[in-house]
Image 1: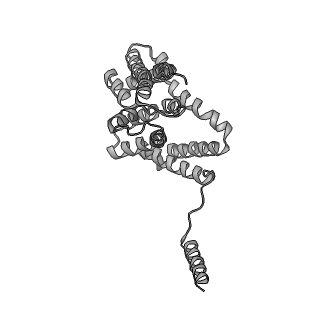
Image 2 (image 1 turned 45 degrees about the horizontal axis):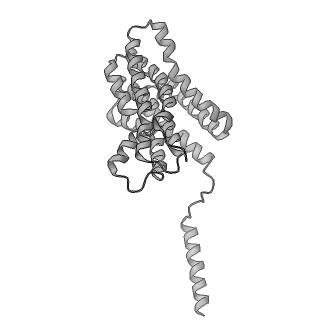
Image 3 (image 1 turned 90 degrees about the horizontal axis):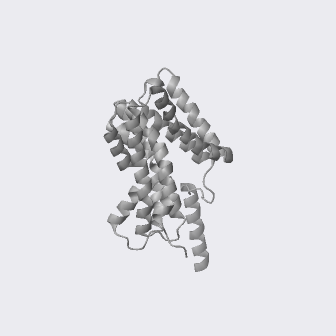
Length: 253
């Protein structure tokens, strides 16, 4: 059995996070957020998409409800990841240790943790260290350099965040038609909310919420998970009850 080395396995994740967070840091600086505040956002959130959307909403003066619902929907996958990871944690792990682990549940860290038959606290905690450091320092470096770099270079580096999203989605879109259909619907809805006269005046957060709910609902109906049976309706339940009652009566006879 190979020895678990969380720091070693988290190194590549940390380097990747640094590059992406660099772009996020530049984005915050361009919109008047101080480097220290940007670094604090990254240190406490560790969510690229959620942070990007959240900062956009804050800059637009969105309400707390709009901000909370938008970030909740965007980060909902972490809830599912945490449930899956909890099945691999050491038995009787204290709540405070579970809370510390929860702070480091991201797509890449979760993927590494999931390869372990049992996830112990020390391994996962050390696995989190370099990704958190990379994400936070990348944001700080990008934010500070964004204040001194020429606008042309800052703008070029700023598109790295968008290219990351495309790089994540494209391979899955090419492999899965259902995902391609959901992505296409989300893109069409986004264009509708961006250009239709009445809808384009809606707050950004509500646009994201509506597009997410419609697209994900469409995806769930288009490609439901295999093995899930249709819930029984009232007629099915009445028929099952009658059948069982008849069976009991025949046994009594």
